[in-house]
Image: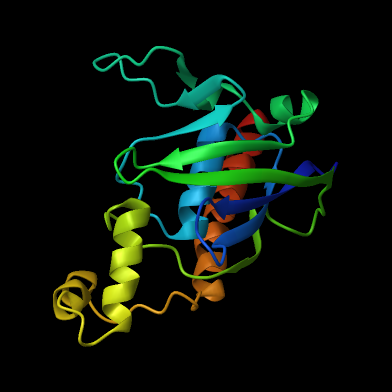
Length: 199
């Protein structure tokens, strides 16, 4: 069996310091829709909001005939390999048009994968992702300030809203590895089922 081509991506939430980032390896055969699923798992987002990718001047997402958006192409119809073939080095992914979480995606390497590894694969990352619906960057800063100070007037309210303490420096590598591993296992099962049907 020929090893598939893999892109190593570093995905960083923009405008947050210190950086919140993840590094993943994904097959270049993945569509941008599949990459969306990986990003959701890598950052711990809950996939409850609209999203799109921006590659140059083109946007890719989930077109809705009931709510047409000019210039929005279907993310499932373009593969990462097409971006690599166009020498695209960076592009962006925006999640939740209200909170406007912009992720910068850098293609670090493209090389042959290993047959012994199921892809996509989580490689590394740092810092915990903001809570869903926190109010974008301004809301996240307010949230961090309030939870860090027990005397802050919003401390107890926001801690209760979040469901407990929040440590921005913590990051559960194992949970993220498992979440992306589930995508890899579903993909492997689908590939095996397809091969079986062909034989």
